[in-house]
Length: 282
Image 1: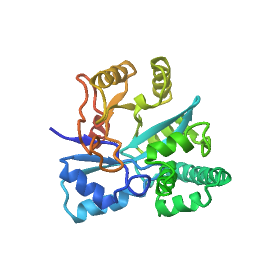
Image 2: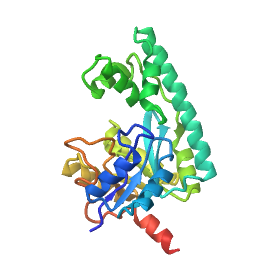
Image 3: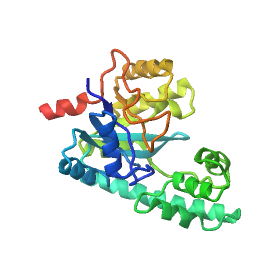
Image 4: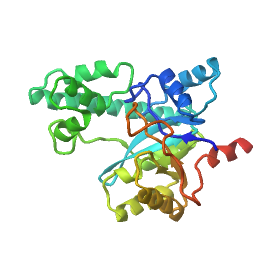
């Protein structure tokens, strides 16, 4: 049986493993098909392809990206799978997203500085290195300063809505992301739909609109998940005619979350991989 993990991150965004480290770990954990889906960048894809080829890894790479979007009052993440990283429309969108991310990061730094936390932006940039800066880098910087015990604590105290360092996002809308992914030959997937803290009524509204504007899939299976949630999301994928995806959303090793761990789709769900399998046959 093929083991798919279609949502992972590297140090090119907010993951803690380099491309080689991620690929070696995926192989070690028995993953057969891995998608790298860094936030608003495809910079890891070419190095990953080269590393797999040079080291003859028994691992199929699915080029991907995770795009932040705005829908109603929610920030919704759209994963693009099997994309062409060089596609013009996608590249232009990601450049725009990266500029917005940088502007937001600078404003977060300004707001934290006003509360007495000077230089956090510069510290977060140093932690990010060549990666796209994210709120996780700010959280890591503040943990280093001892203002909270862990990243979750920083978000709760400083970076969540209505907190000191919260800056509203100005991401693109869902249709823009879906169109760019489609133009790049890929399939668009709603990431972790159960995490958006919305009612089932709103979740159905999201998925209905997503499908109506050309979205094709949704994540159904994740490692940390009650069986009832997985079954419910599988039901929604069938209800709205969306292909079902599975992914760990791996950022770094944790006791309760691992590459390829506890990933399977409920019965009667159509796997998102049939999208690129069918395209390969054409």
